[in-house]
Image (cartoon, rainbow, N blue to C red; front, side, top):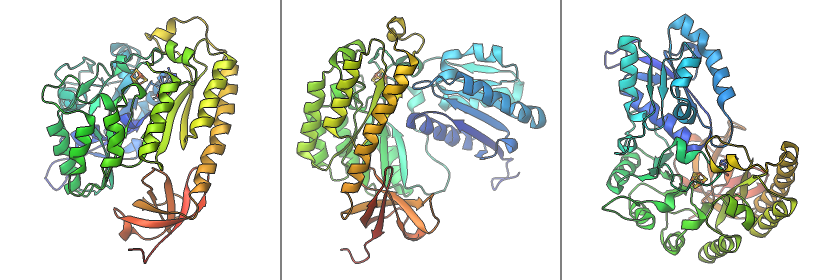
Length: 449
Ligand code: 5AD
Ligand code: SF4
């Protein structure tokens, strides 16, 4: 197809696995590819370029990747599509992927997104296969990639740092994303101003450990100061961030929740285990007492603060007693929601060396018990919102009914209510009429001041 600029436009299909960071990386890939006149398609059969963006943090994705590659082999044969693998698996497997899959053209490591157009040009012009998995110490990979499309969006992720130096004993992130690196604040602020001018109302700042923001930069300001500068940007109405490490949650950051009007009262603070013995084996660097103290302090500043977390069951050596302590912590904190995972060994991590692995059957049982307890807590919390009026940032049409709009409260709970498309991008008062396990239902208040 010949586009407005008189250049031939091609289509790219991206399949994404894993976390928000990976979703954002896929978005960044789409942005850089627009500059090479590739537009997104949701149909792999009509794509000229197919990218599989993989994540190996919480699950073993190798099987998924190879079966996806199998599915797309035909598109390669029929249309001559270029096929690439990006993300964690690309980073870890590198050339091995090219060896195993003869029709694979590109392996794009986690630091190679900004040079994707160059890699693509090489494949297109020479037909040669490429593999780029080096870690870029200068941090060029973190440079802003400004959106060029004209579709207005209500919310946007903004990467403020990448990588991690914590080396929790179960985690592959430091190996696949490299060492912790912060982006200069001027670049971040520019990107957010640009987003605000294009109608973005909410930014979610992304990093593996955002409270470490600024370490290793010369200028530089810390995370609470960065938040305060973002709070000044006209047009931005809400600020969120993820993920924080309990060890680095400073008093200054806790205080920011009461000082900064745009900072939403929700924190995602993974605790991973309720047992000090297991936390030590995980190399987490905090105790349960100190974790609870931080939650108390957060709630002292903002009583309505929503708290969510990640937890792992069945870490090597986890006994029934340790697991019960995890359940006790969950009951005590009353999280608004939890992301729970069965421990799974990652090659190269310290925990992979431990020999007291927990049986799969026990891990599964523990996960079911934990999730049932949390399901009740989440439901109870959602029921408790009934009758209250919440500020909802409207995002679009609800998936459940096209008569309804959907948006989120400041505490990040999803709300459906009757409304129309005119409301998208606005913050409207909604009275909550019903709480469910995963969402809220409400009525828009028309005469609210
Ligand atoms: N096994 C299970 N869960 C893991 N996570 C990270 N590594 C593993 C692993 N090897 C979970 C942690 C982390 C989240 C992003 O993924 O809970 O916070
Ligand atoms: Fe992984 Fe720990 Fe770093 Fe989080 S803090 S990314 S769990 S190593």
